[in-house]
Image 1 (cartoon, rainbow, N blue to C red):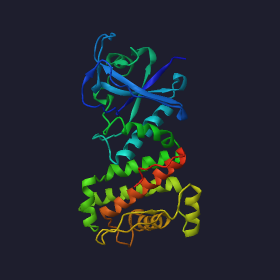
Image 2 (cartoon, rainbow, N blue to C red):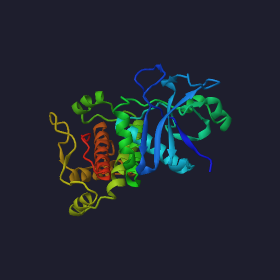
Image 3 (cartoon, rainbow, N blue to C red):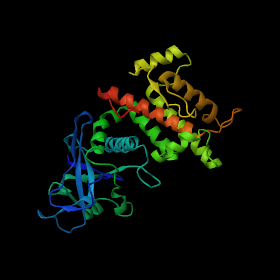
Image 4 (cartoon, rainbow, N blue to C red):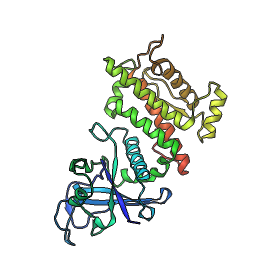
Length: 319
């Protein structure tokens, strides 16, 4: 069997500054729970790679080695999808300004890796259709400090590969593609809870964002029972405290206060049914920015809890 690895494309690794070095800190994570290793690979346009070739941090990318260096396109793509979705989850934003925002992988024979780290662009062009392959597609850059951010990502990745969490992460990612709020947006949302999208296009995007966030919650807990006791029991069954307080604190009377998780999910369930689940309704279906934020925040909370349960940890990042 020919051994090799997968070059992770449309993703990259952030480095402290853009510098060239003879011995940078290489990223390497052995993810035994998912049967893979992820480590740094450096692209090079040099004609020859020698022991003196320096590492260009701008050319740093990720390589995915499956166990026994086997070839499995579907599984490699699942890992790439999980990395992208986990990155979006951690950053609470869509990382790249590209219409597709879809990670992809290229199979690279092991013999193409020079000096254990370098991969020549000419080798990739020789291996893959040049009409489909192009240099700009070979990786974008993560945001955040690589010494902390990437560690969080790799630690969470085994949980992200679990079916229910994998689906939930991608529903939330789809929601964030439609509407993504930054920290500087929050004060205005807090001040004006009635502010709504101003155009029909914005309204439709708002509905999609809210609906997908709720689907993320459903991916973890299933379709919530209309019986309050059964809903609370279901939350306990998936390792959550139904009475844990979630939601926004009341600020000058403008936001819903914190309330038990089961009741907050019931509120969002009602909001989803009345405003975003159907093409026509007798209800006022106009949704506010604040309500979109509420959907997304609850989805993030439920996913964090599910990840903690999957990993057997208590994650201090839940807010």
